[in-house]
Amino acid sequence: MILEIDFNSDEAIYIQLCNQIIMGIATSVIHEGDSLPSVRQLADTVGVNMHTVNKAYNVLKREGYISLDKRRGAVIALDVDKLEQLEEMRRQLRIVLARGCCKNISRSEVHELVDEIFDDYE
Image 1 (tube, rainbow, N blue to C red):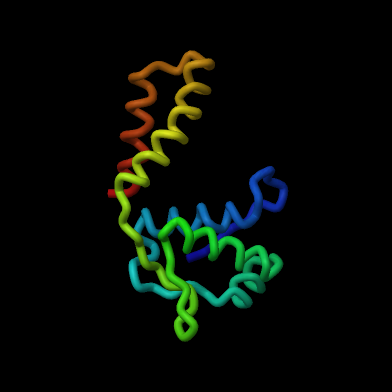
Image 2: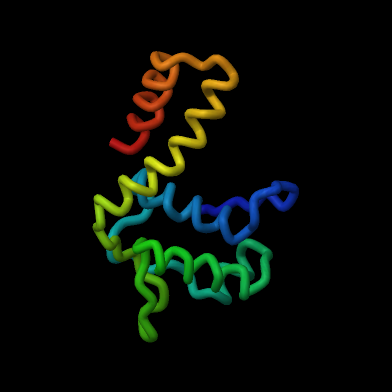
């Protein structure tokens, strides 16, 4: 899996790392049980501070995407809590949909967009 960091982005680097790892899981580039690079390896590869990678791994652990094992390091281990995830999606979608409404994006355009994006994960 190749991670690309946009150092000019307003999005924090650790969030970019988290999002790209989550996208890798969703698109089956990485799978349950796969090991991620060590903090040091990923920091060197991507060209960021080790503390940044450590923060990303801790966020992914807290959100239930990875487990941290002393022998194996960071391992993809999905904690399936569907109700909690649906509630978080609802919270985030409220904001995204409000922005869309302000820009006159229709319900059908949103549905079409969601279907198009969701097709990438099936």
